[in-house]
Image 1: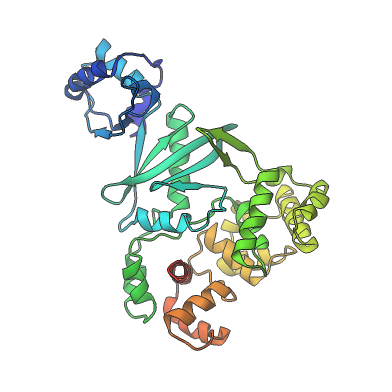
Image 2 (image 1 turned 90 degrees about the vertical axis):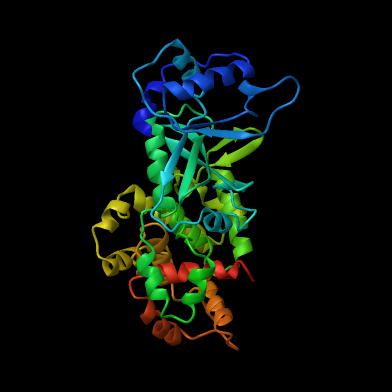
Length: 376
């Protein structure tokens, strides 16, 4: 898809009436085949005082018969190209969307009308993109505020594949789940759900530290203050979108400000120390990927503020280590209690026994159990 679209980007947007566009597009369908989407509520396609709200998609094929008419149509769709990302089936966009929409206080992505919007920094540009459901285990990707260059599309595609874990084959996990009394129900109920991750290592560690020993609602409140105060933002179409703070910009100078935001002294120190450790190379994705799971967990636990739960959470959500099991997690305990109809939460020893059935997929088992809490 990216290669086919390369020839689009050298042309300026040409203005002409909506009626003319449809006439052009009918001939364009005969001439060429490029995957794109256009929306008639875009300012280019206004009809009188009103705006049409329909969305259409054309599937076309390349040809050498490229005349002036062809270039005009390409120039109009320059900012509206949609890249389709194919996942390894099964995949449920609806289930991933439901998880991402779980808190109205989330700032690092926005969910509305079954669309997901997220801001990324790409080559010093703040790039806002939108994801929507596409047929056959796929996702449509639309860049909203920049030209959809092949480089930008490629970076976002890789990001989304990692974020939504689209390359993982779930068949082995689903086969394993059939012999587990808890997972068997959950995989049928949330069929196609992926382990939605946190690609940025510093963000994953900060979120884990923020969430230590407080309820989830207050954790989101602290995260919101942290991101609004120290993260970059972009205003687009009446909404503000945020980037997570960059570890390279964090120093001891922010200590007093974090305290004012109601961060505890411990959490303030932990976040600053993690940022400094990443600045000097003591922690990095590259370094962690070179280690075994046990070695990576031990390496993280050497950092002040990172214990067993935080290390497992980070390895699960950012490094995609499937054997990661945050066994101390209160949400995991509550989910197991609910699913097994227990009178009290299971003990750590009982969870360890249950987890023997999840070997190699502990992270996914945990994630599906977390998902069940959204239905409570």
